[in-house]
Amino acid sequence: MSAACLRELARSFSRPRALSSNFSLPARPIKPSPALLTPSRPFRRPTGSLSRPRSTAMLKYISPDEVAAIIKSGKVPMKDYCIFDVRDDDWAGGNIKGAHNAPSSQFYVHVNDLVQKTKDVPTVIFHCALSQVRGPKAARLYAEARDQLEGDGLDIPHQVFILRGGFSDFQAKYKDDPELVENWSKEVWGNPQYF
View 1: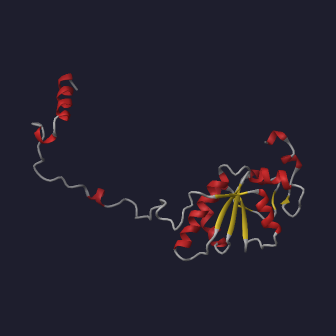
View 2: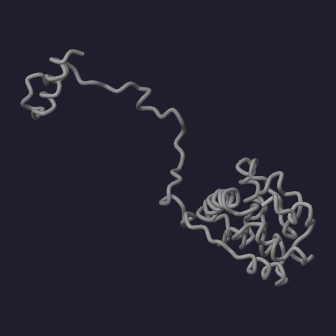
View 3: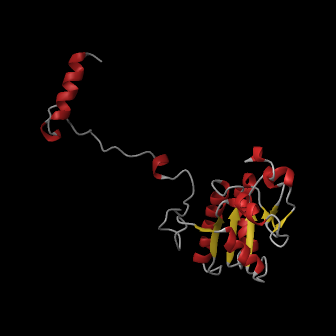
């Protein structure tokens, strides 16, 4: 594009459109193509914060002491509470007693099945090794699916928590308590190179 064309283009934008001598209406109205009028995908309900019955943006954290108190309180696992450990290969070496392993690498595929199996459980706790990425992400996905069921009237009120510090903090405090930790391995957790 020549310098003269660029100057003329700049001048045309600096003038009001109605007064521009270069502005003219098309001879016939422009119709959008049918492809633009028809969505290429079927309509899906928005997943923004306004579409959920309640906000899952702020998931709650629960301390290792609170989880230990729930387990020792006599509450029934899979009826009163449920713990999901979303660690993958790092599941080996120990886990919270009664926790269900739902590997994060496959969690998205199985989240609806997990929700269906636990829709009558009022307290659900998620964790990974440190509860910094995998645990919170799985908790958010689960909470959104569960909130959708509750919004449709197919679920009970529930709480979804993330174990603060993950299994790393939990095992550091409770590794010697067989009511709280099982399959604990000194080779894995007693070696500082794994931290």
